[in-house]
Image: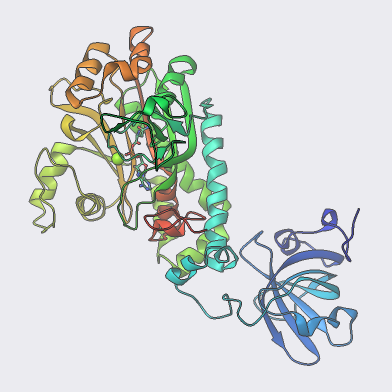
Amino acid sequence: MNNRPLTGKSRRTSIKAALAQERETPGVHLGGWVRTVRGGKELTFLELNDGSCFASLQVVVEENSPAANDIARIGTGACIEVTGDLVISPASGQRWELKAAEICLLGGTDADYPLQKKRHSLEFLRTIAHLRPRSNTFGAVFRVRNALSFAVHRFFQEQGFLYVQTPIITANDCEGAGEMFRVTTLDPKTPPTKDGEIVWGEDFFGEKTGLTVSGQLQAELFATAFSDVYTFGPTFRAENSNTSRHVAEFWMIEPEMAFADLGDNCRLAENFFRYMVVHALENCAEDLKFFNDRIEKGLIDKLEQLAGAEFKIVTYTEAVALLQKSGQKFSYAVEWGLDLQSEHERWLTEKIIGGPVFVIDYPAQIKAFYMRRNEDGHTVAAMDMLVPRVGEIIGGSQREERREFLEARMREVGISPESLSWYLDIRRWGSCPHAGFGLGFERLLMYVTGMENIRDVIPFPRTPGNARF
Ligand code: 4AD
Ligand code: MG
């Protein structure tokens, strides 16, 4: 069944494919959204974009051709299908144009269409998240996001890692920071209570559950069966931080390796990060050129340099000393035992190191319970990777594989060993040294595109007070 006036989708050519043609081609069929309409009585020029690539294709409509029938109704934002001949363009700046033979207006538009020609601010575009994918900037962002999603799987599959889908609903707060969104079917007006407390045992899952903050604990279980595994999925944090680097729903990649220590972990992170950057350089050249020209000057140089650079490693203790010596005034104190704030992280990676850096061996008291205690007794085998402009992009560690140390640490931080008995079991039966990390996918995209706000690299950002689209 084909009730459309023109040829069906099976014969549609993408604009990307059309622009890649070697020779003039008759009877090319395209579909897309009109970016601009120019021209006069005799000739009308439509700039058509279908999202397949950055460039639009110029469609030329002659006054007396059948394609001109509906021309008065075709404005910016309209959706059309067009058939015509792909010919060498006499205009400069473009190789091809389409001489329209027939046009079908599929979806009209009007003067209120918000993406008219002029350049809009990113803040404004955020308020029209349903339409911003049709803009140059967001077209480029989401094509790079797509390319890098694919590259994540390619990298790990090439290295023999097993992809595991960890649960989204969980009873465990992996990071222990208490920032979980609650998942419940209890009636908020009349939940079952006992002595003034909600009886979670009567909830859907028979216990208190929420949206996962990390798939790590379950990935560890799989690593003790499949050796090398990774997750790539949505992650949720109910932290009320309105910064340019935090969203409440983000995507995280979490590899976990058996028979691995902190050094192996840093090497994997470095290779993975470099692979992502090289993949973007090789596959997203046109989009990166736009970011380089319009968003971050020197972006491509930065990415090319990174592809060849060796990443530095400093201990937390050294990092604190470097920051204290820097003479820089920070809003938060720099002191051994306190967590590094993003202003410290950025100063370290941008001004002191001048590139990506791993900070390792943090004080136990500022890190999660599962990290492996070092010989010194007060630091743990943690690693954060920091990069210029973004700050922390990766957090990971070698895991505590020794049951007695892990159990003692859990008691210290107030996690009952019974509640995580399954996690402790893998230390009881066939435990092994293992390590892993989490890379925030949106932070990676910020680094690769130069976009400065995390809300602009995720299709529909979830932040405090905002889940509209
Ligand atoms: O450092 P985090 O909290 O580490 C973990 O969750 C570990 N369980 C990972 C592991 O070892 N398997 O988070 C990891 C990364 C951060 O470095 C950051 O890039 C990103 O996830 N991230 C966020 N990205 C956007 N919005 C937020 N609210 C984020 N919180 C963390
Ligand atoms: Mg972290």
